[in-house]
Length: 93
Image (cartoon, rainbow, N blue to C red; front, side, top):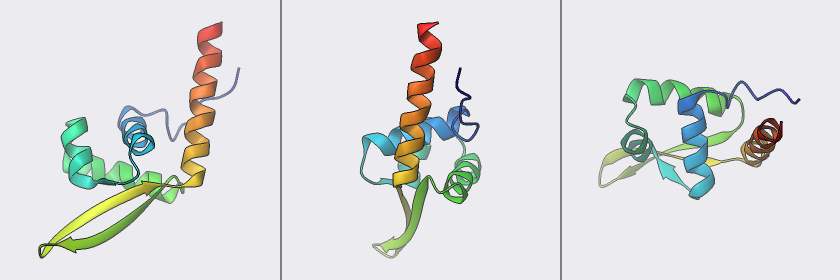
């Protein structure tokens, strides 16, 4: 059996990555709204995913307000694909 990626084997990080797979780009606020997690927890988990190279973060201003958005990287897509395939193998047992 394949090991599950510990970076993705966390509920909030997996939720963030799942949202990124489904959307080309998402905002920090969107993640907070969809997951119900605290802003601090989302911030920590996004930083971990960024450090792992699974997503890219950009900061801009919209109507003079700061906006943080992110996109999944090719490495992140590959990691999600491997993770879901590993889960499928577990379920076949």
